[in-house]
Image 1 (cartoon, rainbow, N blue to C red):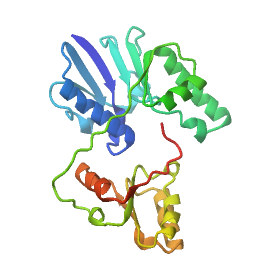
Image 2: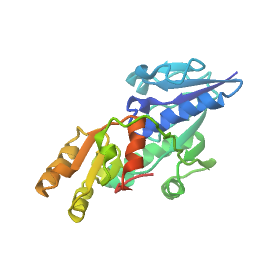
Image 3: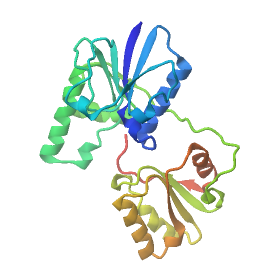
Image 4: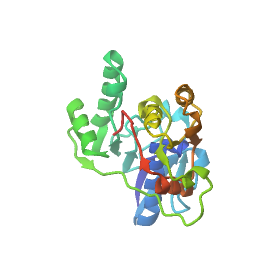
Length: 261
């Protein structure tokens, strides 16, 4: 039986984009149920068993950064994020690397940017194949990296399902709100949406996502300064049911991010 290793350390934050990427890929394997193949999911201990009892689960540990997991028995090792620290130590194990973005090219400059490129190039040199999530990502990768293996474009899927259950969040019942969602960090550029409300007197702004960062507080402070604090709502993480209703009932989905794949 073929042994395949899937590195899903990013499941530690299920509400992040990478967490959702891992989660939905794992769920799809439940549907596909590949024959003569044993899937081994490497993930945080709290997520053990998340994809059912047909698969094997390996508990994540930070120590594996320094003492790699023995990879001799795995024919294929799929690393689901280009900045992962968890790679096969055995050269015979075929490595697939998914590259979502090279956002560090905008975030850093000089020696730090160069160091990040060197680190990624070393991973690329170990691969048997690379997958990318967009043509843009492939273009940027080829411009900045030496790639001598097949590159496969696989677009991200969409998993949100219709919900007949009533929403538990009051904002989903508004008629006049703009909606956005994501980890509330500077690169998402959410603060510019506060100024948008100055042009729409009756509109509200609803942003879903972890709302405990300093940047989240800056957004609230800006809203207060512009006297629209009663129309800016950072509602934290939401479940799939409420997410569906928030999308369904908003007047517009707005996403001003500066750095994506």
